Length: 364
Image (cartoon, rainbow, N blue to C red; front, side, top):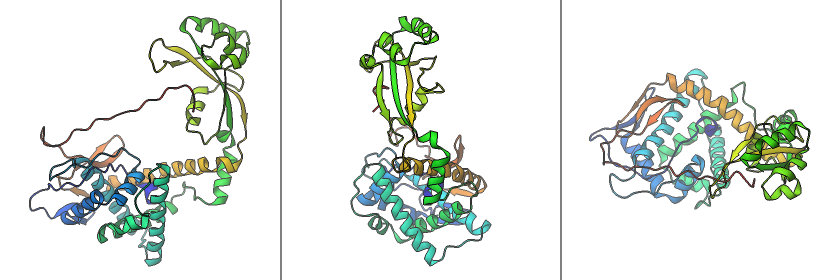
């Protein structure tokens, strides 16, 4: 699927109307160009159609900024990010056509349209967004050239992914086989914790060496309310949002044992920093039916890594020209891409990253 290859970094901000006076081309990739008028029309469609805005933002799974007003409103990030998506799509189309000699026919384009609509719907569900209208209506809201490009990009990407040796097709048989070969990754974990004061860490370590059980250690040294239950914190399914964090916190410790090295835990209200120990008290096989959604997500992630490595190679070899008003083509630690154009001080908006933090305990 195209979005397996093209990880959208789209942050919908609003449409910008400043460009080089008289410029007729917004971007060109390997000889294929997008006119300035067409590119501005795409930005305008995104900014003014709530359904399209919502579905693309869901697909991006990124922060959504409030559109500004006027010619030079909050625009630089949108223009560069949308330009980046268009460059990637055109580059993939060119590679598939020139190297794999594939040109999607009418049937492939019809299939790609359905595939793209499905991805839009899935993205909205995963991000808990209730988008106005249907994915089909969102596509219909695109200018004709934009819609045709997105569907053709989808078709080319689907074909490219199908030709990658290391990708796993999402068939029922493959999903079940992946689950069977990674059973321990999907075990349900029942856990216990111990929150230990700094002054008791040495005594805790000594008691560990003496063979004190997880429950006994928690009851004797833990300041967490779960101490009365031997540190028991219940069980965590692979579908839990805390599952990855719990596995990481357990580390390589055996079932029924706390790690020997504590994690650091500072309560949200501040104050002292404590030692945190997390142990798996049991691991049980999670039925496939309960783990299936996570298995699919893991396969998609693995496919994404493989496909994005291929995408990076395609972009390294691409000949790209961008109107400087919309961005600049360059190289970052994550590979080639379009960067926000440099603007004089005070001529454009500033952005602030608002990071949310959550307490390590409880796991919920």
